[in-house]
Image (cartoon, rainbow, N blue to C red; front, top):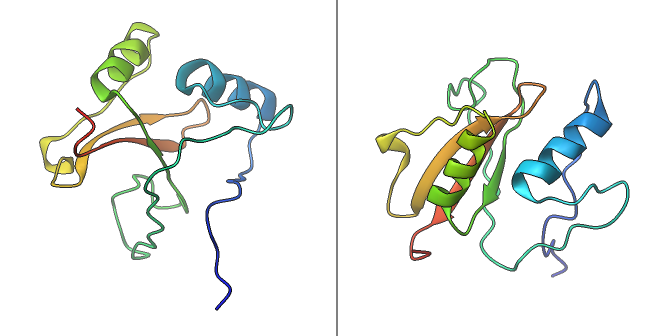
Length: 120
């Protein structure tokens, strides 16, 4: 049976797309997709619908949240904090699948950072 084989892109509205793209490139190393294609490292991807009533994303009107696999959560958290970006961590977010942290992009969108178990 034909099937989807990966995420081809994540697209969202932004008040200032250039500023948001620059922020993602500077702080998370994601190339500006208007100029090039970001080549990801192969690995796990979770596609997980949540209940409409979830509080996990934060704001009720938030319809999506992106989760990035990272190779060194502690190092990235230190870099983000040094850049003045607020990083939220909670012990209950960590589980057998790995460790998590959360930041928000310049437009307030939640961005989850995930270091899969076994990466350390």
